[in-house]
Length: 355
Image (spheres, rainbow, N blue to C red):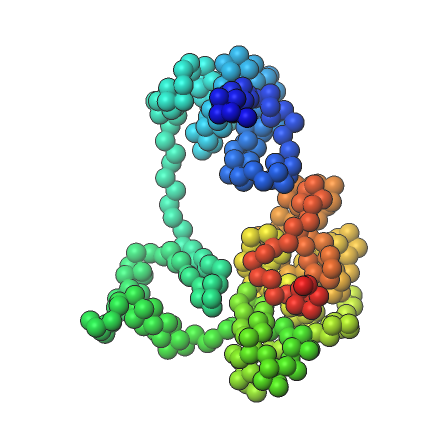
């Protein structure tokens, strides 16, 4: 295909190309997820469920008649997405569909008629990054005077002979622990396959990586000094026997069930989620309300958010659901496509059985 042919194909693809839009098929084909989300918004606007079918049909007719490209249609949806009133949003969509000319003309008209979004007041928040080579990042948003106090504490007694940033980090970490905050609360658990445990004891597993249920890892060399202390707990898994499967008639998992479930999935298994299982809730794969039992082959740790949006009712097929596949929790898309969370590949079933 020549560039002219490619350009013709792109310009010739209008709204009708999205009539049978399939998000999962687009992602499987390797398309950019940002592009897929943009097409999904367009499909929802022109073909999705609505309480104003006549106005939706009118918008479709305008889109067909104007010959707007998919990029132009996606731009229109991105510009009006923040408008809270659906009626106003529909009117703006029609007005922009009627704009003749190229993309620049559309952008100029949108700047004239689309109201600016209301600024949202920032809220206090804390986010952490995925660990890289034993280091994680922490982003904290709080009142400016609080941040100013923290920066002042971090900058105390800085040496002019060394870079500021590492010193500030060390000062803030020291202030954190000296203020009475204990390490690792609640106490994390490290999952150890029995054969690897033996190698560590024999000083032959220094480079072996083990996963903790707070989303971090440690090497055999780091593990060995902790065996006689109480900083972490250990959950041993036999390659054949695995953990003991405890059955329970109560809806709520007991401590041992939660511990073993956390070691099977050290982080929430929804793809891309990095919330450590130590901070997750015990999720029933077959919902308790549907007769699901509280035992290890029905328990998976999910973060609070994903536990709420999981499709407990398999007929709903909106956000996907969790199944236990190969002994560990795996997210399954609304189109029944399993997808593992690659964030923290140190669950016990992976360490024992994956190549």
